[in-house]
Length: 427
Ligand code: PMP
Image (cartoon, rainbow, N blue to C red; front, side):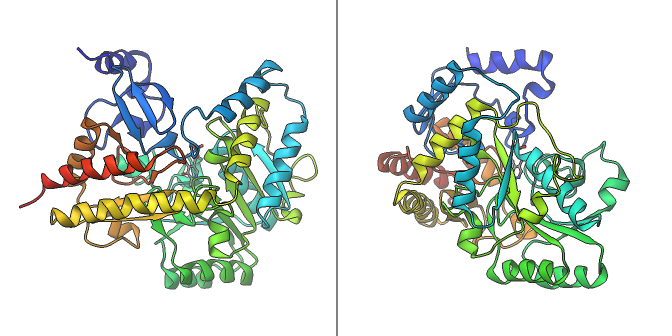
């Protein structure tokens, strides 16, 4: 008798695939997803009351762990004053000021409700600003599910083997140029062939939707220099990396000032909130000031803003990211040591509080290298970890996340379980 199984069966009746977002269905790894009943700190419990050490963290937002008391208190206080007004509030001004003070690239910022909205709006703005249509994205990067971005995208589209999506008009996809990640020569050639046509590059500065692949320094420099030379817009999609890899985000680690930035996940502290922002001359083109339309009934929702503000204040504490990065490093070092003790070709790495696990001897640098990893082994490893109470992302193509709530004991326990899980592959 498993309540999880019963719920999954019941879910199929009125929810397509039983889930409200595809990767949750365990399509890649097989089996029944745990239905989560509650979360506290580093743990979640499923419908059968089994506890897991959680390295998904709602796919990134929960950098403080589940139900952090100060975040919950802020949410409760805001909720008591009303859930939504569709009118300006003081708290959204505070959040905008805070974001612009944390990131030098942000002169102005607009709040939205999901990462998809943020990237979709940033692209419309880049096109409206430049008067050009063509967009460069990179193979394996996922930027949400707007039509023009569902071309060779990562995340669930990799898991399900769809290079793209049905329902995306060919004409829309035609304006999206897909290039290999970390390939400077391909980027240079593309700009040379499309002079005056490219509106923007959109990039995950540390790709987290094809496992974890950091951009190389040469690639970072090339993207910034080529967009500048060609009057194109550089969009850093930091929905996942923003306030996750560092308080200065990936752009701070890269020492790059993008023209536009998208944020999500951590910025809403677990509530539906995201943002896009950047150069004042570009943001001035947005309605009601300019001709680029963008809007939202629930944009800047007061409860979500309260969760975001509480989270950002807590992660701004001195030493927060040093400790989070060290903890995540301890986890990946432990995975690597356990795999090598079991003689299993494996590698793991982290950037701040984000990590990647690969069943290949070296860390990948490109989408092709990610795809060459041993997916069958990943799936077996995933299920052994799950069975022993460690909840990893249910796909070989997703990054994992450590929160401030994970203790050294949690990390040690995880590594011990991984050690046993690797042994199943020992010759
Ligand atoms: N951009 C990136 C880099 C993401 O990782 C995601 C979601 N994982 C999105 C955009 C889309 O965000 P959302 O799911 O909130 O629409």
